[in-house]
Amino acid sequence: MSIGRCIGIALLSVTFTVEASSQVDRAQTLPAPQRVYLASRIYTAVEQYFAGWTPELRKQFDDAYQQYLTNVLGSDQRRDFDMASIRLLATLHSGHTDFRDSWLDDSDGMPLGFDARDLDGKWIVTTSGVPGISQGDVIETIDGKPIDRKSTRLNSSH
Image (tube, rainbow, N blue to C red; front, side):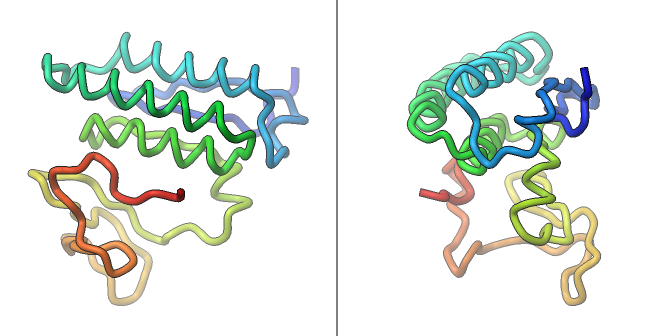
């Protein structure tokens, strides 16, 4: 089987890759069975390997996962799936847990050019190749809207 590009989930500095066929690797849409399979793999990996559970966080994640399923089953667009997956894993508030799909980087325009992590309740730039954005900068707004620190969602594509 040709691996080509993969959808990956990085948890606790361990990378889990979900193999996809070459046809799905390049597709802008994901068929429902593939979305269900990937969503279940994400949930299973988080349940098995995430180390920062508290009872409150587990309930929040389960609630977020139910909304996530509604979102990913409601659209066959790969970008929608990826953005929903990013939002789901952001609910864990862990710099060691994220969602990466190289297809999104390759097909959805230019990458941001910087990386930021939630550190002590603030979104801090950790690396940057963008003039005017430096390591240590605090992100306070997205698209001119203040980041709600109590919210687990940084933004919404819907």
